[in-house]
Image 1 (cartoon, rainbow, N blue to C red):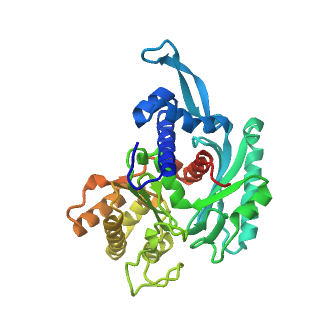
Image 2 (cartoon, one colour):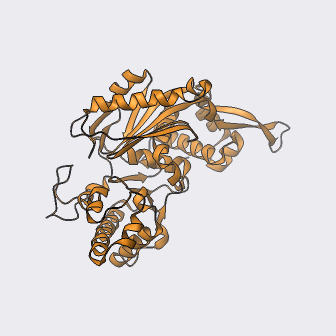
Amino acid sequence: MHQSGINMEQVKSYNRAMIIKYICEHKTASRVDIASECGLTPAAVTQIISPLIRDEIIIEVGTSGKQKGAGRRKVLLSMNYENIYLYSINIGRIESSIAITDINGDVAAMTHIPTDNKATPEQYLKVIANACVKLSDGVKEPIRNKIKGASVGIPGVVDIENGIAVRAYGVWEQSVSVKQILAKELGIPVIIQNDVNAFARAELLFGDGRYKDNLLIVKWGQGVGGAVVIDGNVYGNKERKTAEIGHMIVDPQGDICSCGKRGCLETMASYKKLNSIIPFELENFAGAFEKGDEKQKKELEEVISLFALALVNACELAAPEKIILCGPLFKDELVRNKLKQSMILIDPSFKNDRLIFTKLYDKEEYLGPVAEFLHRAVFGLKF
């Protein structure tokens, strides 16, 4: 396998990711099938997966069929789903979710707690830790004993290496050592990641990202977030910056945003802002259109037009094969259709099928941190 301008370590990482995506998609697969489908030699597959078998991330789960030209049956491989559990934590501006789940995203227990913006970060993280412990007390002991760590998704700028929420927009104004605080309270390894970047990893492993290498992930919920996938990798630069589409400027005369800039998309399109136009539940944006008067409907459509403008501009830079929408404000087809119409009005060449809604919606609250945890484990990255 040769890729110009890419060193051998990058090629090895690319191949490892390709193998994991294949196993996650098929649930079980033999070394021979993996090699054939991924364009690798059986020896290369064995070299890549041997450390993962040693670390019990991948396991052998039986045999099936016979290899061509040989009498031996194929040994099937699978992710070690049933023996690795974690706390999957998503901290949001309004509400946070906590789940105990295996690395396939199958949930053993889940709870939600309001985000307490009046408490100090340390106090609130202790509340989360207590909720984790309470949740684990309610599951069977074999599952409780298999909890290997905690993975946290959080909005804004994240120092993933040191486990620090540098600037969690709309949650905390100061830097917070999330990893240190939770690890002390829970007594297990803790990792953190930007929430949309984590969900982008979920799309790569479990969703439509398995079939495309270049994606734009856009989340519209309590806030506005985005992630860019280039050649199957989630983009982030050395300054810990990610594709924060919510902080693209759409109105230079607009309000000051929580990030410090003026007129960001999020100042115009956050749930808090929309709720000030017409009160509605987070997952019933379409209902707001239906019950709103003409003035309110016009204001909501203007917000969607600004969102469309930001997406069209983002596409010119990132050139994604697909734009994957996620988050409760994109749940209703009415909203997505209005967005598509606005994008086509701005760019008549825009193709309808380029914009899709995530197939992972029912797992969106917790699957991002799960995928980030799995990514770190597979690539042997720092916990």
